[in-house]
Amino acid sequence: MDSFNLKGKIALVTGASRGIGKAIALRAAADGANIVLAAKTAAPHPKLPGTIFSAAREVEEAGGTALPLQVDIRSEAQIAAAAAKAAETFGGIDILVNNASAISLTGTLQTPMKRFDLMFGVNVRGTFAASQAVLPYLLKGRNPHILNLSPPLSLDPKWFRDHCAYTIAKYGMSLCVLGMAEEFREAGVAVNALWPRTVIATAALAMLGETAERNCRKPEIVADAAHAILTRDSRACTGNFFIDEEVLAAEGVSDFSRYAVEPGAPLLPDLFLG
Image (cartoon, rainbow, N blue to C red; front, side, top):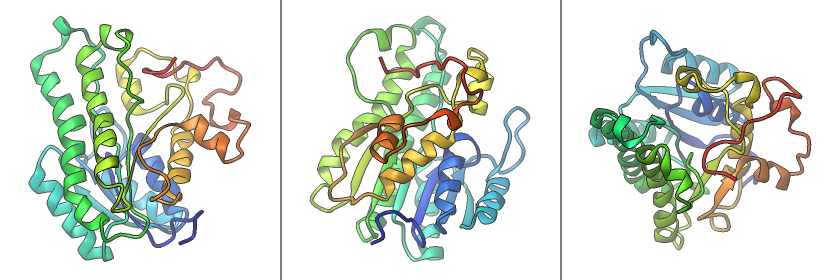
């Protein structure tokens, strides 16, 4: 195993049509990885940029091989079919990135149950279902990894007070890390979480309309951190709740200015940290 390269690896990335998911896919593609882009957006969205097909073109241009699949990860049938198609196309699966997520930073009385169900369906159920569907292939994979884009766990009430439903839904993804890392430790499947130190400039953030993009970092910082994790020995790197800055610092990175949307502008810390 080349500890620093994903060449030839097969990675299934959920929510890969834009944002952090696409950035992680492109970073792996630069190594020559095979990328399964699993996301809902097959036709242009009226408010959000990118589709699985435009992302697939970028993956190919970056040096990878792309398999775009329209998948709603709330459907166990669709995610199981996507995993089977990925394995049939590329000969297996080595990496699962659970990136797809739904957000609503609303209080209890301001959160419609439809939105509650969406967050739990995508964040918790989708992460569990995708992991369940892909694990049989990971158990036969090369240096197998699951990486969830979810925060470190904390029971500090301040993280629940203003958006209780969203916090529980994201922590559900983190609890999957806690449980599955231990469950599959002996089998050698790494299960880790990754979360950004600062707010990341994505289309979803723009739709929330609450944060100035100039005070954010680009998705590439999360992608580079994910790459560093996914190239580590799966048997020696599991059950961790990583922060992007800390991962890159361990890799020798000391200057993060190139990741800033506007270098020099004050950066906003992300939720669940501090």
